[in-house]
Image (tube, rainbow, N blue to C red; front, side, top):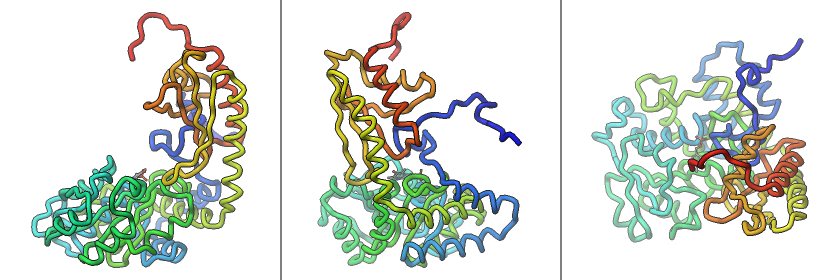
Length: 380
Ligand SMILES: *Cc1c(COP(=O)(O)O)cnc(C)c1O
């Protein structure tokens, strides 16, 4: 029996993803075992709370933390975890959010840790109090302080590092929350921040762990995870009712975590490097082109290739290259580096077998040929 090719029927083109785990590019690909596990529950009714409890316990055991829940992405984890800090198990409070009347209503964050996803925290009706130093925190903490929020990848940008942040929270008895959404690999990070003492830690399910794109993980203290559960679906009158996780996502997330922990991470890293090297060696042969392998220190810490060219020799801008790659067949997505002339980046880990050759060939062609001929004026 021929399988339906729904994308083809719809006329939606699949892409080669050399950009990375971007939400707008559907982030990651699930392993076949994850897809099979999801399909295996699709035809069965279950009690969703029972499945949540059981899978939460399994994941907590696998990741050696007190408690865990599968959430609707790291974003959902941020909202559910914040709500938990505000309401505890108080039913009236749970129903009242995002109105925080009667509750603590402030969240402390280092100024350099502000990020677009802190909207997930602000959704709970809290005010973010920005601080720079430890003294600032000591002054800012009051009986209104509900939580302290840390953005893991911003650690080098702030004056207060993760361990000290935890210690400050502890000394004031304020729960600390670390958003480490994109910070796997290394796999140890799934354990590191709960062990360090953060009360809550969020990860994306659909990035490094290769679970369902809509899923995420909230790890942490038992009573906070229990309150987070009460603030989300299937409970109706809650801030998190829309942050629903399906039975397929629950099971898919568990299997993805199991597979991730069993993987040979070093072999996988070497395979990523091989791809990067394959592309790099082709591009290096072009006159005026420089390539450099790099691994970000935190967040998306996998081999990448930075491609730079001398625009006096090759007169095409990165955004033109990206556009030509996008419009070609197959369509390829790469990320231009806005701050640098003649520069773009290639991520290794979202490429599938065979993709590296295609990306190398297409890039070489475009860089040799230069700008596409244009009719009329440009509108960029
Ligand atoms: C990707 C990301 C999120 C959102 O994760 P989802 O799983 O897509 O909800 C939140 N915070 C950070 C730092 C991220 O990188």
